[in-house]
Length: 227
Image 1 (cartoon, rainbow, N blue to C red):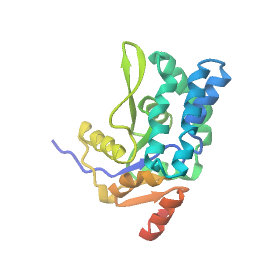
Image 2 (cartoon, rainbow, N blue to C red; image 1 turned 45 degrees about the vertical axis):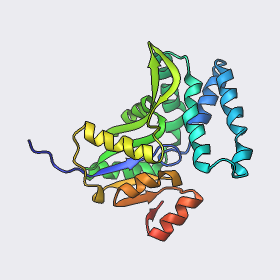
Image 3 (tube, one colour; image 1 turned 30 degrees about the vertical axis):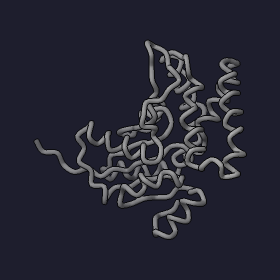
Image 4 (cartoon, rainbow, N blue to C red; image 1 turned 180 degrees about the vertical axis):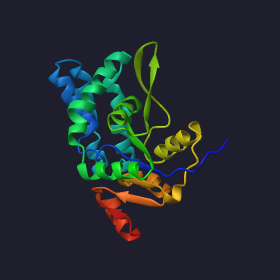
């Protein structure tokens, strides 16, 4: 059976395709709806408590960022699948997508017109990335999966966490699962952050979008496209 080689364009979410950030959106949702406030408070204050250790270099930047990303699942611990989906729909429609970066979205649409498969790859929840991908007509999405016991979210993630090297693993698993033969040399990846370096280096055309200081320096040194 003929299985032609495809070119892909991979897009990060927070800070790349959109300006907003998931954790802040979830906090706003809980306070706006006057429910489940304790997990939101606990998430913020427990992680802010790590900040002095990070600034004193007693905690690596990678572990600091990972803790913010991995532990956000605690904010939906105990919720049913349906309750979580209600939150994800609100986040997508009312908080995240209204901050869509038009110039980056235009890049995405141009790739689609040129026959590229588009992939949304984010550290956020897989179920949320799926909703956003559907809204934007993106072909595939990968994110962080969480454990469900019965019909309720346990508060634990399923490895790998879709971050740094884990994001590359998720994307490669997506290729295998869907039997995709991908021309990585002709493909694109878009991100704003240094810790997405593994996914940017996976392709022949990495693009730094409003990059942080570390990624900006690397992009300039390597001659990558910068938006």
